[in-house]
Image (tube, rainbow, N blue to C red; front, top):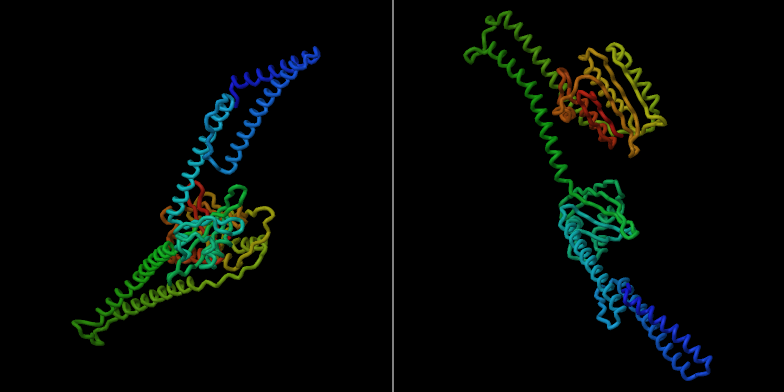
Length: 450
């Protein structure tokens, strides 16, 4: 950028050149050729000086831009006697200093983020579009069994090809679990990917977590809940048997000796008969409980087939028509337009729906006002089938909404406590889920995702 003084100087040189040219022409016409030649010589000197200034400026600017293009921020322009050039030098030096500061800030940020990635407790890997590793942190190296000190980005593919293949396979918004064997220790790794763009290049950022401990803790928690309920049910069944046995024992044993036949009267006989009958009934109840447990652990593997939603819904309406009518329930079914088929095991899904509708009917029997059950079938953004079963009956307390899926947990007086647990197992086998939301404002909604 030229100063006002430098611009004035250039303008003055141009004016002098014009005056000299006119003067040389005037003396040439007067045939005073010596004066004309001297003036033209001076004019040429001024032209040369102007061209030199222009050439030097161009070379300086070109040199500066070459340095910027080559990321060379060490270039510095020194003092010049030419005020015009000095102004240009000062501007370029100031701009260069600003570029240096930006470069230092970027280097600091790069080092900061790299350190942050390296210290992350989650494994992180960045792959480019050619599945080449751009960045890998220490925890990922530990998972893969390679040295974190190595700078060879192809080492992972060489040392642990299955691990590398999972990195290449996982796509954005998808999760993959991978059983990784490292030093005779099994890890269950969860891979998730996110797509990012850098300098017009598509990159894939992959996070890796060992979920074995988390799953083990949840499994242990589930076993503890199951054992607690099993213990409770078995103790409830055995305690009366023990009590009845002791009562009958006291009838027939006196002072450590069996009673004589003539001491057995009608009251004792009747009491014994009733006691044995109670033992039989309690034993039957315990057997039913055990059979329910066996049923829970022997769910058949689903046979997935495509079936018509409309035909399925018609069958459900016929199935529940008598109960719905007798209990004065408004039964609605709503299907998303253009949704015609479901791929699932129809028999197993029927078990889930029948269980949910029966539970809804039981919940509505205590309701005096309008009783309502509604089933909706739709698709979500992930192209998954969503089935919702709604009722406006009694609300499930928030502290029980997760417990109702635990085997043998029930809030019903004569309930087995396996219906909802079976339903959850069936949904898991379909790689789906079942959940519940229940509150006074919205009623109770069970949501199935297939």
